[in-house]
Image: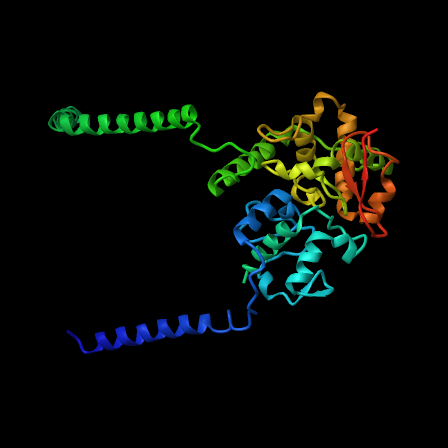
Length: 129
Length: 209
């Protein structure tokens, strides 16, 4: 066997591992740890049945490709909710339940979610890292 | 030469007769099993049809994609007006508030509470003019959607009324919640929807007349 072949294999492996390692760098580094605020699986169902996807792009929810409001991808990383409030569980739940109180006259309606439903929705959004 | 080739081919078929029979029988059996499986799903209700349980993602994709493509292909014969008048938009807004807002909401306006029990869920329509062409919107309004709660409004509305609705949907992306509130008539003709004052505060209910 040629002495070159094992060298090539080792170098190729090193490059592959290096590229993969670097690709992972920085992706999850700055994502804040979000507290467990509800049940994300139930939240996905609430999102589907509340029509949220007809205004927002939401990863993981079928037909959630609305162009009315901003996309909600990487929501765990968002620092501001509704362009106004720091992204904390309490603020997020309040925005989900009573957007007309937070920003009167904005397009997002008070959809009538109760506290548990809103917490579950928030939990799903916080799972989008 | 052709005769020789044909003879060789016949000989091959004869030599492989059991193999061919096995494949044909295997294929037929597979179809029979699939048919029985489908029948079992129907007869035993193996697919959960309740509205509380969402579709499997594959089924949801298939149903929605079929609806989208069916609409795209079949609406091609419809010709939309080149433009709409403000009067048409206003008339469409009145129709929308009367019969559509309960399920589809509006800018700053929620759908009726019980609508969260519908599968598939009626979408908010604020960006409908971007998703669909005017002929497609007319088609959906006129013909409805099977296995959903979307009626064929053509059964009870004239084409002119439907085009008014399309005019309103066309204008909707540019309407703020305050603009929309100004366009509503004093009371809704049917249903109960949460109507929110553009000045904020508690939502109030508009009850049927």
